[in-house]
Image 1 (cartoon, rainbow, N blue to C red):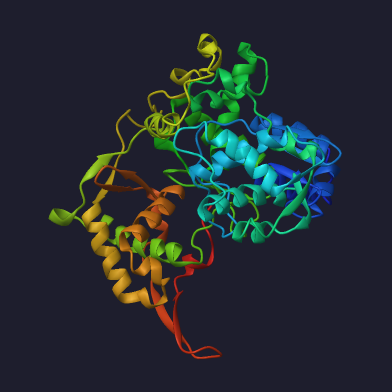
Image 2 (cartoon, rainbow, N blue to C red; image 1 turned 90 degrees about the vertical axis):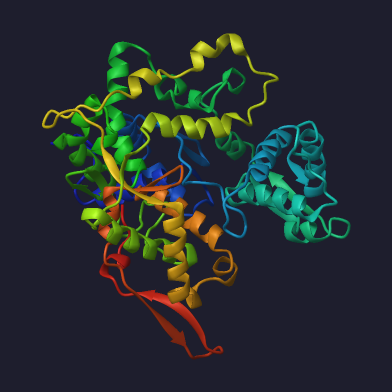
Length: 474
């Protein structure tokens, strides 16, 4: 019997689970973000949330009068939750840099700040960073800076008092914007769990127990290890048994994991031979939905059907089977890309042993009590094969695709494969991709192109008939 939500009555359980999903989906909740009712919902259940989120996941919930901030314990580097621009596109490195420099500059201002004045302060810091800079005479730089400011405005850290940021981005000589600064929300936004000067690698942020200031004793370490399994299931579309070490494998298969997660979130845990997943068919918790709308998602879905068909071939037409990179190898590859941008100046190298996580204990050899230890291999499709299949898709369904992506198939393929990798359907490797078991869920996908006749001139869009396209995967 799960001990999650022990103090919650059956009649109120659905409301409590709504609060859980809300704070997991939005780690920062303010009086206006993500909506005006969110903070009241979280604050109502704050005590129970603190207890359950720490006990099950190792997450710490910090609440104030105007904010609720979830400090997550992190086991990996997640590229599926980027900050988004005003146009809904993921932040690039320039925008992330401007966001961090804006936070630093706001700490040196009073109750209000003009956008032009803030831009000058950020520009003064950005010019000292090789390859960055902020030239307010350049429209692309102004747009990137306004995206960072808008991200803070959406969360309430800044409130527009007068003027327009969009107008300033268009012509800073004729337009201006004035903002009120909310110090409490700024503190909640920038709440690092480590002294950043002590970090020599991004992986140092993944030492969850040390980062959150928890006890480092053996009992605490065992509790933190036990929380890895529910975190893995909650944070990923699927937790594959092949990726788990022996201790984690037992935790993933334990009945208590499903009981705790289902009672905590109100969602369903699905077990298959290859792994376990938390199924969110309504999108109440998922930050990334698949299948979904838009050219990239539609092309990716059609690509899954072709990969699945190739996987089922046998004999001399069967695909080559290759081992997938281990979780540790994937983490190391992501870390290298991020660490390449870390500055060497200002780092306190003599304290690095306090910041480095124990990677040896987190990634061990896979051992299954029911099977001999061995290397799991997955069907491999080459880049050239994928380009050929996408060319077929564009030829058949391209009339419903966005013109810019239809005309740039390499970019469309790259984005589609990134989406499939984020959904744990494939692993991208040198020269192609490996098909993972969850991909089989989308075999047999079909599509048709429907012509719209009113009220605009005729246009075409892709609509999907397959039943699997109606519900997103976990």
